[in-house]
Length: 306
Image 1 (cartoon, rainbow, N blue to C red):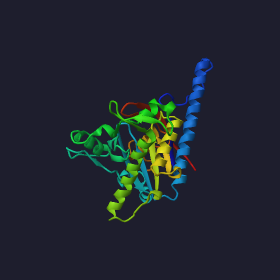
Image 2: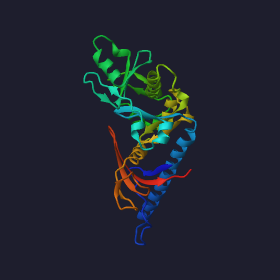
Image 3: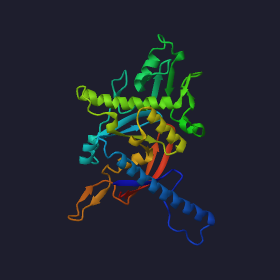
Image 4: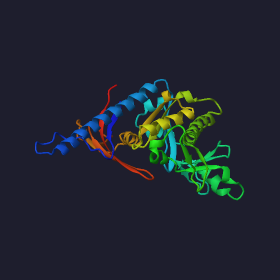
């Protein structure tokens, strides 16, 4: 199975052994970078094995991109993935309609609205439209409106627990448990996917949640507590640990890029040039530019045998 090796923005590609004149500090830095690369290699292999082992009996893989500004999901059946590797046209990408302009988006704003009793009301464009368009007829003082709240996991990473409280996006707004806010968004995507397949098959239960392996992307800068928090939120949304994999955003981006034919390669038989995907051994730099952060990561295409 194809995989990759990655390092964070503060880590560089491992260098060769330093010359004798190199300073002890440079030697330590070089040794540390080689260690980082080895750990990244090991982590990438573990992610691949984790998805493969958990997905053996699953019929569908669904990935949620939980972004700071916008979020969305995509899915592909196991049959289509196995028969059409690298063909993104076989992947289902739901679209979201923004009220007013009629345009379709592959992602919706990461905004969620809760009723005064803290039950989920709406997400994305629906949440923003309802909240901003009904201020004259609905008293929102007791409601909860969260927008661009993902960064709070990093800002308050040392205090993140299952009981962490976060304020909503308004001045003197109301507060809720952070895990309940994140869980509501994950559950919304889960229910949206299941409902979508049910509608397409005339109310027949085409897939149930246990048929799905879920992947949720997380920023590379998130620490262990933040990742555990996301797992708790997924569990609260009805996604168990044995059907969930957390994937670093740079790794997910690189995995996608590896399927895109971009390099020019000369065939051995007739010396003809052809456009191919990234060959094993090639090295690449990925810039992940988000709403408030930019992560630079270095990757090397490798083949992991499991």
